[in-house]
Length: 129
Image 1: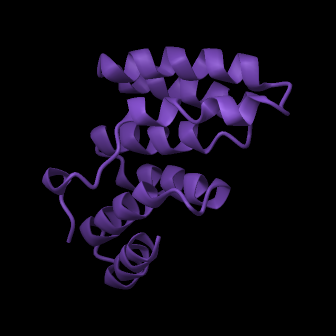
Image 2 (image 1 turned 90 degrees about the vertical axis):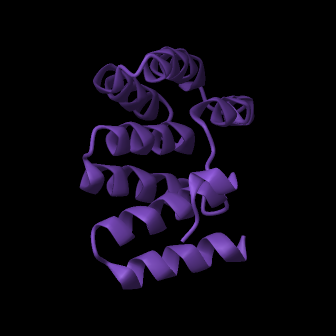
């Protein structure tokens, strides 16, 4: 199993950088970006419920924004809502199947939920990217 100490995790801050690429052809992006930045600020302050609400608004404004789903997963994980975290990470993976860190989080969560087969599948996906 991978651990955060091994540097395999990615922070919410790292996710902000690629957002500009989404905005070029998406009219909902400016509003989504605004919500995402507000959500990130709440996330950093450990106001996870508020961050989740704002990440949800970002996702609604720009459905392609996998980053808001990923960061929602991080918030749910901090709140101990593991099933919700899995759902958010699965949404992020569906929107960007090349975003490697999401598979590590899924593997860890499936391990915690006792689903070894799905944990192994996600660990393999992480290793292959």
